[in-house]
Length: 298
Ligand code: MN
Image (cartoon, rainbow, N blue to C red; front, side, top):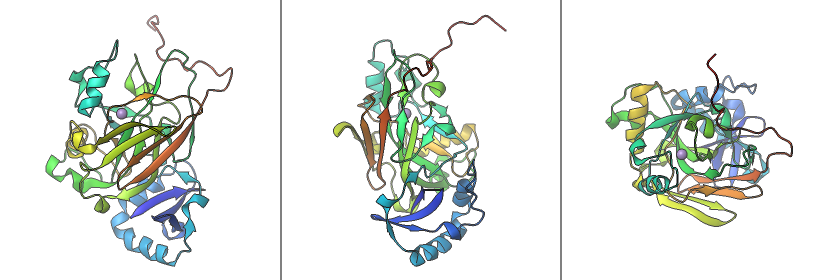
């Protein structure tokens, strides 16, 4: 099942180019910020699935192009992300002058701000960082379906709700990942969630990204250093993961700068395509400085 969030936080089931609005069949759907009903929908999906299917069968189909898609996880509790998780990407990062991302950091995880999430078709306004490159990273996004903590690797995929496309936009260079990857709009997610039953092997998916139509990233999830299952086992050995939480599973090689005016589009095979437009920081906007410099102790 393909589940999209659209317009005023309505919910639709996607079927090809058509979308069927099933919002009114979802209990406790509250469209007020911070949208906690999406994790509730994920958590209760096994019992709600038949209701959603019935509602979709009754709903009038409409072209998906006629709606404004929103992030299918508008307010994830956590976004856990894998560092340098494709062999070729780890090599390209280690080769960058002054790289802060050595091969030795492979297998590590970090957090992105949930507030950095935007949906398909969003415009990402770059922060005012004149001396920094801001890069695209196309990734397979994994949505947690059930609370999981210290789950054995052999069992972790049973806790996955589904998959989506995810861009881990990144300010390159010095500074902590959590800050460099958490600016507003730096985590496009979508265009919808695809439930795990439609993705039998998350290690057999192609991941591609284009900037203005030019193919920049092209690899398969088979070339991850650590599999989705290994990453989830590791992450859940550290922190409990909850329904609606997101794992960003790392990016293939080919990362590079995004610039104002560009159209950035990615695809995960069997999932869909996610696109954003890149805009410049408004003139006179404050410097979105990375690194506060050395401060005297408080
Ligand atoms: Mn990444």
